[in-house]
Image (cartoon, rainbow, N blue to C red; front, side):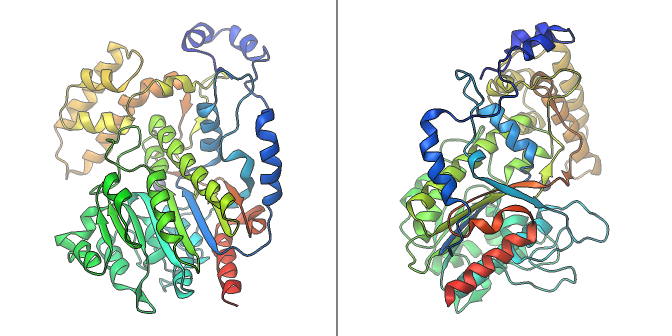
Length: 479
Ligand SMILES: [Zn+2]
């Protein structure tokens, strides 16, 4: 289905033509009826959802910040403009229910990723910032630890620092998510039955594994892990255990990343191929972390880039589960981010075509500008459509204010966001994307599941039920 093109949007802005174009049966609100060729496949898929058997392997995918508006917006974005109806995403046909996300925090009732991931990993509601500890700061057992106790292989994959809240909550226990040195140390030091807890660690965060933090990289290497830093090394790795650190901090967004960087699907592929060699099965958590990290600064280009990367990983996991009927795949989100809305202002229009034209994310352009690069050039290289001189001047004004601040000054971060807001205003306007916050929002999120045990994820469940279900599977699997 073709969303109104740029020209049409200019024409309809603020006029009655908007109503008539949208009402002309172009299917902007189409039901998402599947095309014929997909249907036969779909029926067998659906039969396999709601499966009550016990899985041997669990692949748990977290779209960090992937609230329901992200899934719907991505459907518009990924739609093939040449077909009349709006196409389904890879997620849609596996929608099985929704989840509640609220934390157990004395001050905040909207969750952060630490409390969200601790609910996923341990089944405990806790306070924001808590990593693998309950509301009283006591360590709580995680499903990854249970998997290891059962003799399974385990893996954590993220586009963020691998010490970031979501992966951290599966294999470490600290009272504050910012204690990343400690989290990395626990990844190395904590053992179960004499073995390292996590066999596959792939993501960013090299900073926490180097000389300044006990040379953890070298220690892992000595213990038989392959230690890799780019896609080529990752794909050539033969060891069953691996530490892949592809950036000092968070990995660059897929739209901006150099080719030598692995994408989320490459990391997922490598992780599965290593973990599957264990006859007792595996537990793997895969996080599309930068969906959230793009949502915070209201970077719609970044969000679509990372939703696309996450969809590819989801499809990969789903294909694996179809070939290996002992594998359960669950995909969900910990919360939504940014209050992203599909349309803003008075028009009934959201225009993903504008986002398709973008060559870089707002994050990338903002970083370039903050390094002192020429604003006009950065915007020209990053945008696929013309940005008005007036807008460019506004970006320059904000960039100038940033230049006057030092990085460690308190005002720096908020001014950086102002630069990013100015950088992104043309794309947020052109695409008609609305935002309400730079933080998280508390709506329920979608659950997608397939394979043995998927029945347990049906309906409106609590985020803690993910862990409760997986513990239950792993308990049965010992008997
Ligand atoms: Zn967040």
